Image 1 (spheres, helix red, strand yellow):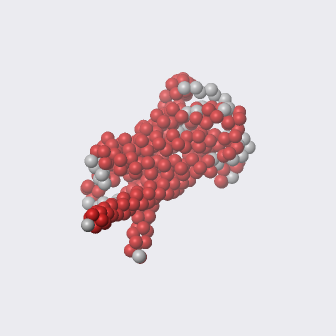
Image 2 (cartoon, helix red, strand yellow):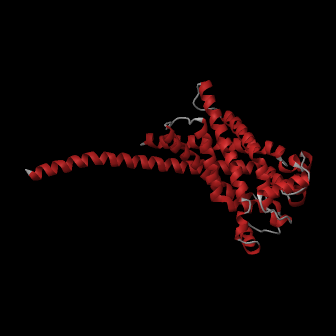
Image 3 (cartoon, helix red, strand yellow):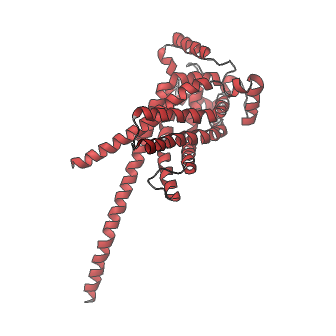
Length: 326
C-alpha cells in the first residue's frame, strides 16, 4: 500500500512538473528567437542606413577633423574633387570599416533596446505596453551606451580610414597593426569618454522620440502600426533631435580619434573644446558640419528605424506562416 501511495505521488509530481518545464522551455525558445530576430534586424538596419549616407558621412568627418571652414559649397567641391581624383567608389572609402563597426553596433544597440524595454517594462509594471517617458529615455541611452562600449575600437579605425589617403592604410587590419605599433594600444580608445557622453543623449533622445511618435500616432490614428513613410518621418525627427543635442561631443571625439594623423595633440575633452573654440569659434568649430548632419542624420536614422521595424514584422510573419504550414 505504501508503494502505491509513493507511485501515486511520483505520478502527480511528474504530472505537475512536466507542463511547467514545457512552458519554461517554450518561453526560453521564444525569448531566444526574439533576441536573434532583434540582432539580425538591427544589423541589417545599420548596414542599409550607413551605406546610403556613406559619402556624406565621410565628407562630414573630413571637415570635422580639419580647421577648414565648412559650407555646402565646399562640401560639394570636396565630394566632386574626390570623385575626379580617385573615382566614384572612393566616396565610400572607409565604408568597409564602417560596416565592420556598424553591423555589430546596430545589432547590439537594437537588441539591447528591446531587452532593456522588456526589463524596464517589468520593473515599472508596463510589460508589453509602451513605457512611460523616463524609462523610454533610459532604455535608449542604455542601449546606445552598451553598443558603443563593445564596439569602440572599430569606430576609431573607421575614423582613421575616412580621413587618410588609401596609401596610408591598406585595410582595416593594417589600421589596427599600425596604430598599435606606432601609437600604442591605448590609442584605440582615444576619444572614448566624449563618445560615451555623446551617445547617452543621442541614443536616448533618438529612441525616445521615435517610440513617442509611434505611440502618439497609434493613439490618434487608431492604427497600431504606422505606414512605412510615416516610420521614415518619425525616424528622421528622431535623428534630427538626437544628433543636434550631441553634436559638439561628436566633433570632439573625431578630433581626438584622428589626432595621430592630423598633427594635433588633443588630450582631454575640455582641452580639445577650448582649442577648437579659440582657433575656429564656437559655431564654426564645435558645430562644423552640423548642416550636413541635418541632411545625412535624419535620412540615416529614418532608414535605420524603418528597416528594423519592417524586418521584425517580416520575421514574425514568416515564423507564423511556418507554424500555420504545420
